[in-house]
Image (cartoon, rainbow, N blue to C red; front, top):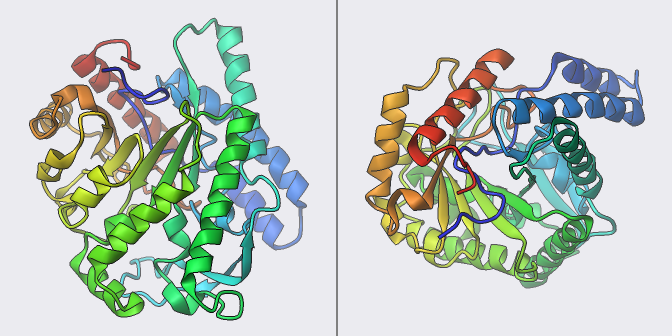
Length: 385
């Protein structure tokens, strides 16, 4: 059975370390020393470079590195009408750097007045096409768009973060949220996008006993019921996608400056995740013991693929090649079709927020090259097969 279109044996979650020039420009923007247009022009220059770097280092799934974002989710959600960022969340999971996650609130009716990611997609897609033509590249290359999962508007704030004036009850809120995502996915498809990845920390947080307890208190219901509710929400959001659009989902337990926020194996959510969620491919964090063992993969249907994040973007040193091959083979024992259902990646991106993880750009690309090398050793030179 072939891999879903746009999925590769050596894959990645999407973000890369931000160039210092972009970080400096964002500071200037905050100080009103430059305009948004000037920032975007600079981002264009560096996105052109990171697209070329991905191709040069062997990747075939290409993103903009999330260079236009400060956070993996906020910069997208703020473009949804009715959503605002207000302060930070009260959290028991404060990082050692003193950062608490930003708070997303719903202040009015949710609407999708215009496309959010289409221009960004077109920019990357255009440069990918130009690079392929100029360098005579024959193998497939896919432009991937990463957007936050719709659960990101609800989980961390719950009812208290949603205007009771706009939504006296939550059913219309979820209906409108679904419509926003359906519209964005339709716009992306019309623009030529065929691969969308939903980034979801919340299904992974529901693997953490402490966060499950907090969720039960915050939402006033059983976390298992909430897991099913989120699967239904995501399914509705992607339900109108055309047959040739592939949908992936990435689960993450936190990734801020090499620090994590949650821990716990996938068992509490595994059956819902694999059997009820209507996505094509899962990008799953498995870089250390925080993610548990591979046994939850026994619920994986034969028709689905897992990009196994056994490599780590959190540390500068290279992963041990033999250990990575061994872990891939261990995971394969639980999959109905074995290694054929698996691909390789790092557990998360290298820069889920603009601050980035604790490694250099060259260390980042060395890790990518090693990943490609391992994938070719395990599956052969054709990374799309």
